[in-house]
Length: 513
Length: 92
Image (cartoon, rainbow over all chains, first blue to last red; front, side):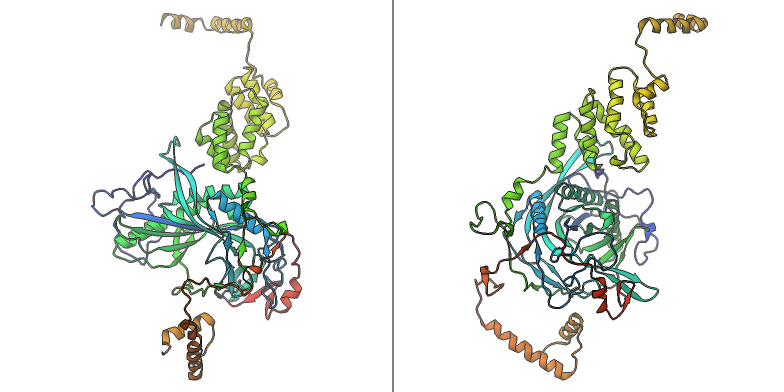
């Protein structure tokens, strides 16, 4: 569901008795509405105490694992969960004498994503080395694109609901600074009991697209909505499966606050955010923490903090003393990446070696925003409905399938999909694919309702029975539970007469009264 | 021009190399002096060069096929310490 909109205000932090080393979890008062910026972004007046309002500023760095068979610069397999160090080539382990060889599919994925985000694709982009020491980075550097990335200057539109009624949606835009190709690192498992780190390089060298979003957002809900939309786009393109739980989509948030008219405040980077829900919480917590710190006369350090999901707060990360010097240098083993379009296509080159931006552009699938528009136009449903349909994997297809198989109008069908089917699935934590009620069965049921063979109440009863997945058809259940609507006029009159006859007194009272 | 203590600290931290004896520092200063001769060349309006091959060096694009991996045993042979197919490294 599209995120609820921000309607409230960033209130002045409540005065606290003692100022400790930092607000702990209790600093987030229960019942306090976490989010607060107005629909246009930015702060509203703070209220009675006359303190200048705060404008929170949120930027995001998102790493999306490219959906490919093999890694960015080597031929080892990309797969989640495999025996440790089994998906590692000599290059991934950084053995001497090995060289990077660029995977064509990864470049196409980045171009698709850049085009979907309205970026300019750089026909010439470069690779660089970013140096730092860590056990899961065997080479001592990561190959990335720092000087000239593959795509720049794009935008992403996303929607929020203003007010809780989900009636009005507002569209916002965040600028995309750039998209760059880079290597993922391996995984470190910290074994504190034996004072050692276990390193698995299966993930080392997997292709990543880093998407940098400018600080155009102002609260957790905006950040969450933007990431959700990006996730849907990536999944639609197929360039990344973007499942956060499997580490295919990782988000770092850059947060700062300042007073209107003043320069941006010192920003902190928040890492270790494992879900979209936690992203909103982490960002809002950090905004609140910074406001309280500053209002209590403290300062904000330019540091990296980790989000602790159990406590719901951010904590400073260890091992981050001073600014990192990555000593960027051009990757000497890779020449520039050259991309072509219809105009610049070279005549006599092996076309397996050529990537044509226009060719890719022509084959882009419908993006979520376009799909939603089409659903609204074709079926006459509300925009909010289209959001919910696309938000649930497989739900839009289910809806369209039911519409095809029933005479009931789509505007009525949508109610059954969103209110009945979806709430049942949510209650039982099922995906659309796992639904015990198929689109065929539901359509069958809705047809009975549409032909007035059963009442709406009866239909709900039948549906409840269908959930049990016992293989009965709607018609069988209707007959079993005697839920048919009586159509015969004479039979109805007889029943009514019998009721009236049995309740003479009440009838007389009703007629008199 | 002398190399300051802060710069030395920084370099040692980055490179994980300890070269604090006076011979080391002397060597470093000479190396920097030698490299600084590059500044005498006027490079205004000249694009940095990636390779002497210039645009004759084409970036080869590989097909997305799985052709490597599955050599855990071989890779772990080089490890000074291992634990059940993981490389072992110091903490933190």
